[in-house]
Amino acid sequence: MGKRNGLSRGDARRNARLIRLRGVVRHDRAILAIDLADTKQALALCDHDSRVLARRSVRGHAWQLEEALRWGRGVAVQHGFAGIVVGCEPTGHRWRIVAELCDRLGMDLVCVQPLLVARAREGEDLTGAKSDPKDAVVIARLVGELRCYLPERADQIWARLRQLGARRVQLTTTAGACRQQLRDLLECAWPAVLDTAAKPLDSVTFRAAVSVVLARDQGDPAGIGRLGYARFARQVTSQLARWGGRRRCQRIMRAVWTAATDPGMLTDGVLAQRPGALERARLTLGDWHHALGQLAEAEQRMTGILDQLQLTGLVGSIQGLSAVGAAAILAESGDLARFDTARALVKHAGLCPRANESGAYAGTTRISGRGRPGLRLAAWRAVWGALAHNPVLAARHAHLTSRDHNQLTTAQARTALAAALLRWLWVVVTKRIDWQAAIAAGALDPRKEVTAPAA
Image (cartoon, rainbow, N blue to C red):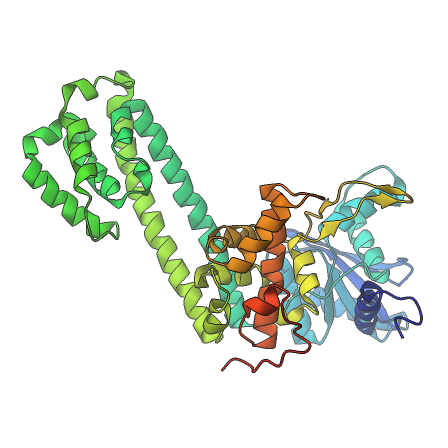
């Protein structure tokens, strides 16, 4: 029917989505819009023409709205409606509390994107004036126009994965900040030690040796000379296990000892800043170690959830994609079964193309940049690790960056590969089949290839 009527696949999906929304936002239900805040909630009960039937302001938190929801349903019945549908913005965690209350009372909840509310607010009176009661009416109008969506209702397992993913992002940022801060402090107070290895902060031996030096005499490197090299080496060995290392590098350890005991190598840097900067460096090194330990624990918990969901083997079939990388993506996306197609997942990440065409004019096509930034970042990071180990991604990257027509930059090609990785992951998880390089490369038609589901 789509071909006879000239409908595209996008038209068909959009029509199906509107039908699902109309099944919730029915004409026989009034719309109770809530502008959520911390201790004051603005409610507006409207019909589908956004005419205000009643207003109410509640002094209290989101979990104290049960009586207000009952009030809204009662007033709607008095105006001849069969019930209400609740609409709100996904403000922090508060919308989840409202969703829980709606489930208890047998009501449906829809959400409206805050960006749409901001744009629609300007269209109300062209002044850009903002107030909670006015925003509640704007939310009701958008719900009546079906410019809303049904929010994700994650179960306990997927909700736990999302929380752990958020903690992993926080710890990754903290560890990166500690790493950069440590380098800045050493560059200021003890620059010679940074020349002891090609990539000093990546070396476990370097971290262990520097921690031993900074732990003595309030961080003064010259004090390590009284310890003796043999005892210094034994302490570095004990510190090595603390940083997760197994074998020490004699060359780096000897270079750190020389940088700490050679008087000529201690004259560089800002001498007045050395005592305070090295003390701070010792504290920062401890913070870095703690953050890395917490990060490893969070990643272990996330991969454990993949085992619980029976997805470890499936995502592991994608060459180059680690279990941690897949868990980070799934923590941001949620259950992939809620997306009708792989394209919907790519659009949710903001990696879909954004056309710039009008008539005969064809401008530069970029990614939309909308959707979920954390999902976009997780897919981007996963590509960096997978590109060196996945022949399909490597071949596609080489093709995109070397073709004569419409050649892409390295960053643009990696963005395209991130979208491809999300499409693969959607197929693997939703269809419960292992990834196959021949199908991913386009050598086999998946519609003709019979693939047994993964055990």
